[in-house]
Figure 1 (cartoon, rainbow, N blue to C red):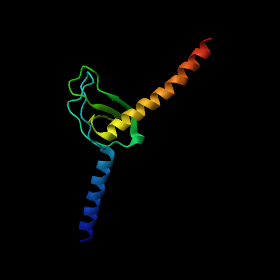
Figure 2 (cartoon, one colour):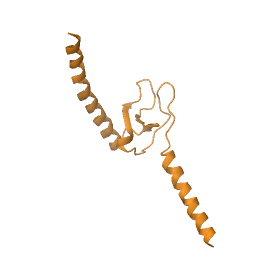
Figure 3 (cartoon, rainbow, N blue to C red):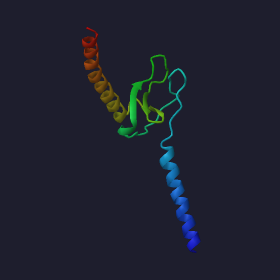
Figure 4 (cartoon, rainbow, N blue to C red):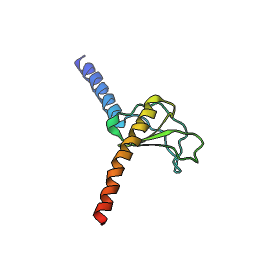
Length: 108
């Protein structure tokens, strides 16, 4: 009986380990940067590296969230995704402005 309980606990532990290491499933993005569809998969902000819209030539619009290991196609109408895109665009524009002025100063 003890070995049965131990086996059950071991199986639960292994299932938990696999789910932690695999993370959420990402939709594959084609070579041209388009998404075949999208989901409403919440990605922890600490894992997000880049956020952008799909290119103009794509038929289906989506927000592409690049995380540490995967790219996710996210519903462009989802408020969470819109807010994340706006946050990333605002932080990118704030960061890029000082870098450009510093580059001009160092070239003189």
